[in-house]
Length: 147
Image 1 (cartoon, rainbow, N blue to C red):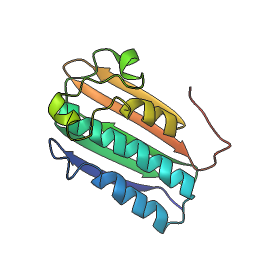
Image 2: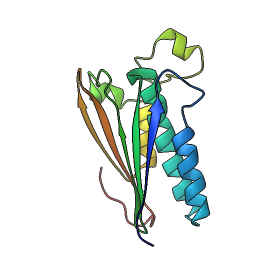
Image 3: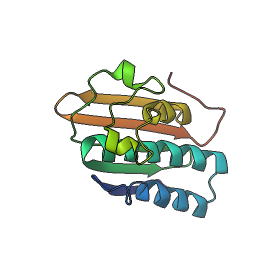
């Protein structure tokens, strides 16, 4: 199988559309017969990233590459950037406003869950410019890289 590539726009401030890209990727991975655990991990990591883009950055983009060895996802926004990445990686730490929390989002599990469900997570963030997440999930669970 040659690599499949998909690009999505994640609209900002619209929780009804958040998750549309990860749902579409999940459907596509099922169609090509990808392992159920890999599908679950990719879908969770992408969804968490989409929600973060809606909550914190006014939306962004998702780029997905599917090849036989891995699924590679780039989530990119032009939001405020992450002020303190080490705090943002701690479970339960959140800068989500109260109105977002009242909707059941913003519990501070986004980045920790993305790290947990990916094999490699690289984060490039610049305050005032935005954030890019580079997520890799290997299709062979025995091949794990990163931290």
